[in-house]
Image (tube, rainbow, N blue to C red):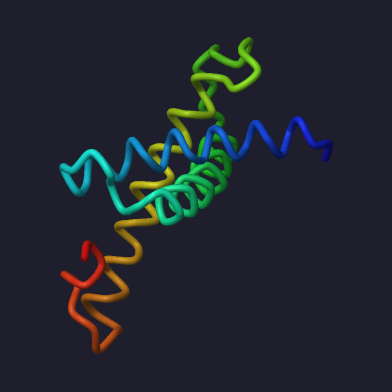
Length: 101
């Protein structure tokens, strides 16, 4: 993996995390830039994995940071947050509302 690919993943993760944070928190800052980046990178990983597993090809991969990567990353970020919510609701002693604070 070369530096430009890592930089592209960081940019895509930041965009996806910021979008996810705005959608979930309904605040411009989302979860904060570091958490947004982490959520976006995790979402990009899981979303890309799921899209490839099910063979979802939106025909958008012509761009360096493709729209398909952003869409799959956003879907994956939402799944990561749902997984965290389920874990905290059913398996953790912390309240689920602590996730958004």
